[in-house]
Length: 446
Picture 1 (spheres, rainbow, N blue to C red):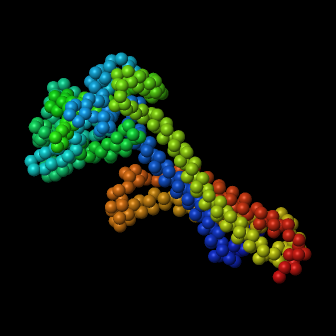
Picture 2 (picture 1 turned 120 degrees about the horizontal axis):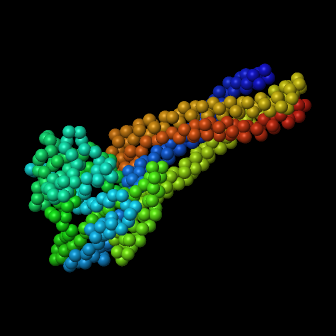
Picture 3 (picture 1 turned 180 degrees about the vertical axis):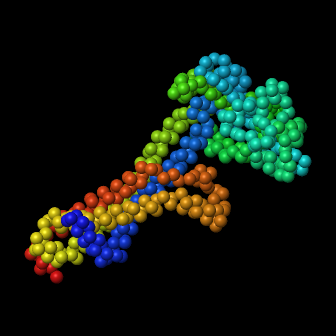
């Protein structure tokens, strides 16, 4: 009964000063909202990064040819570098834990159909490329490259969605032929739109799939070969590259541990490449290692963002303490009268502590409700920037333009618990100060 009476008295006291109470609640509200929002934004960014890495395949090992610096390349001859077909054969035949190997060769080319022209990547690959890169054929729009087409070195191609839209805006491209260099390639399929993949570190370049054209790698080797030349006034630069990238899929250790052999296999692969290449013209990416690093970074990021948000709650708590100390001074005579009528120190402490906790809980509840609006607010802000500052949005990194905040479930009880804790901790001193007042001195206060 005494707690209920204390609660009612606390509500009446807070209602006597609505503006002051509202400003006190505002401090806690901002702190709780900051905790939820910052953790949600951090989780969204982290989820996006992990999605990019998982898209590479946690049980894959990726080897990529790295072009040497310009100053080391011959100005009047051919500079060979990167992965070779012999490297590919050695890796496949000597490492028993490799389940599948995917060779890729990429060159920049212009694609022409009638009077329309598109510049993009010509990718020589095998049928497994679509699975590894998570590419899907549009329903009813043909098929991806087949083993038979690779074996026969057919002049066929598959168009990315962007390439198809720009070369064939008004007709079905399947069955038509596009012109690349001095050869024609018959379109046998069109892919669905695939989101660009961000670059990872310095060894794996960002990939934009929108203007790709895919052909059998055997056809590329036959038609284009291994040499790329760049002519300048009085000289030319040439490079010889046989394979741009090799993706090795590692056999699972068991059904429960599909990535068990990845790290061990990566050490063998690195040793094999080091023995065959003296220069640093081959880089290796192990998505499993990147994924583990991303998870560790996510935890550190969440802790860091949580600490920043917690500062807002501490500031709100200091505001509560200031307000309650001022309230104690204002209500000195009330405290003296209550003590004279028989109220104990515990009653006075409970009275002021209940008021601070009520302010904190109210701020916490409003902050939680506002915290769940993080996603809509971010999307609204992005839409506003798109309309008001399109150039600014165009220059932002893709991850910022596409990230979606995800409210971390445990951040809600954490933020609310901290808000209540702040109310107790920062309200305890004013409550104890009020309770330890000398009743006679308090009654003399005017």
